[in-house]
Amino acid sequence: MSSSSTAQSPLLAFLHFLEKEKRGSVHTLRCYRSDLNQFQRFLADQYEHDSLIGIEGEWVRAWIVNMMKEGRSPRTIHRKVSAFRTFNRFARRMSYTDRDPSNGVSLPKLEKRVREVVPERNMISLLDGSVFPSSWSGLRDRLMMTLLYETGVRQDELITLRHADVNVSRKNIKVSGKGGKDRYIPISDDTIDQAEVYMRSRPGDSERLLVTDGGRELYPAFVYRRVNHYITEASSLNKCSAHVIRHSFATHLLNRGADINAVKELLGHSSLNATQHYTHVTTSRMKDAHKGSPLDTRGIF
Image (cartoon, rainbow, N blue to C red; front, side, top):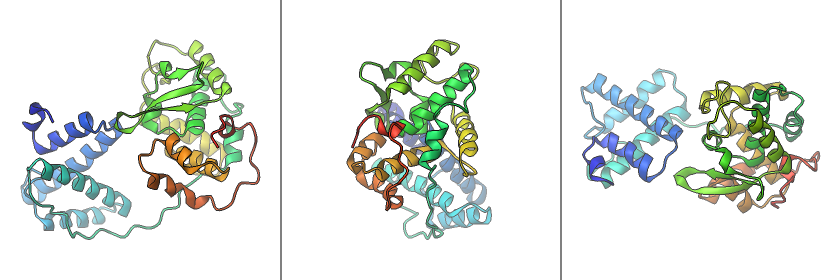
C-alpha cells in the first residue's frame, strides 16, 4: 500500500487497494463503491455518522431491515453486507478498527437459485449467422456472441479484449482476467475468420476488438442489450446476460464429458469450488450434441 493511499479515508483506501493491488475489474469496483456508499448514506441519515468505521452492530441490523422494507431481494442484501464485511476485513488489517460490527448479524434466507442455461441446439442454431444483419454491426454482434459462447469469457473480459489479443497463428485469444491474470483460450478457425472480416469492415481505430455502433469502447449495458436481444429471439428465456452464456458454455462442456479442471482453466477460476457449481445440471449427457459446434472445435477433452 502506497503512502498516498494510506492518507485517504478508509473507504477510498479500500477502493484503491481493490483497484491497484487486487486488480479488481471496473464492474467490481463500481459494485463495491455503490454498495458501500449506500450504507454510508444510510448511516448519515439515520445516525448522523458519516464513516464506515466505528459503527455498531445494531446499525448494521437496522440497515438490513431497511433494505428488506425497500423490497430488496435476499441475494442483493447478502451481496451488500458481504461488501461491507470485505471492507471491514481490510480496515482491520490496516488498523482502522479492531472489530467487526456485522459479526452475528442475521441475514434473510437465500432461496436456491437454478442457473439458467441456453439449450445447446439453440446456441448452435443462433451462431450459424443467419439471424445477424449483414452490416458491420451485425458482424460485430455475431463475433461477440461467438466469443462469449466459444470461450466462456466474463463480460468485463470481453469488453477489454483488444484486436492484438487475437493470435491468428496460435488460434487463441489472450484474456486479462481477475487479479490481472492472463489466460489463453483456443478459438476455432471460423471464429478467426469472423474476427478478420469484422476488423476489415468496422469503423474507427480503437485498439478494442469490439466497439459500439459509434466506434467507442463497449460498456455493460450495451453488451446486455445485444445479448438479451439475440438469446430471447433464439430461446424461451425471457432475459439473458453474458453470464448466462458463460454458464451455458461451462455446462455444455461438462455435459460433453470435458474434464472439470480443463473447464476451470478456461473459465479463469482460482478455485475448483467455483467450477463445481456448474456440475449440478450435468447429471445426464445431451443426446443431441452436434459435432463441429464451437464447443467441439478445439479438442480440450
